[in-house]
Image 1 (cartoon, rainbow, N blue to C red):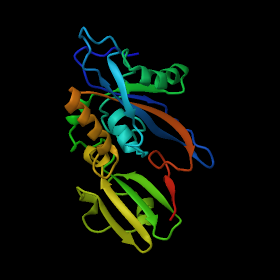
Image 2 (image 1 turned 180 degrees about the vertical axis):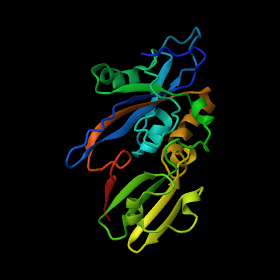
Image 3 (image 1 turned 45 degrees about the vertical axis):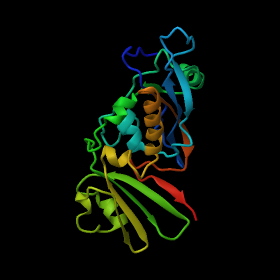
Length: 253
């Protein structure tokens, strides 16, 4: 367990397990789970004798995505893009709420969760959305129009790799220097390019604003409060191009 400074009254928790072992048919993928917790306003008063941190709600259904760029940006997990993570490897706080402790503690103790960390809402609220990673400039996604189809996703530098160009064709002029999400079609192929910034991977096209809205509301009600996450790996039919190859996700009508 990690010791947290007494001055911190807001935090988020994450416990994580990630496995990069490849099999012939699948990769072990990393998913995110957990819940929001807050510091009780009665702490250090004569009338309250309960635990200081209280579990508020689960992460789901606010967040239901698997995005390694976001995981990397926040916690350094699957950090193929080279983000400087906001809160990597801090461990679980000693005063973790009983709800979060019952969910995460045994899994961390047995090694079913590989690591843990926490981050404050104050940190999340002050993050610079213009920050870019060190290793990659953008992310390409492509799939064919007819369904069922397969969605491919890959981090890219400039210039884009030859194998990517052979898949998506020559992009429209200016795409490589775009500052916002760009979509185009090449024959039957639908392609999207996103510049890799903190604002892009945590922004309005993701589920994170829903999570942050709840945390913001708790902060408004109680002062700065907290959030808790856990991570686990499951076998999914996805080839991970963030390290090597191209991830593919089945798309159906």
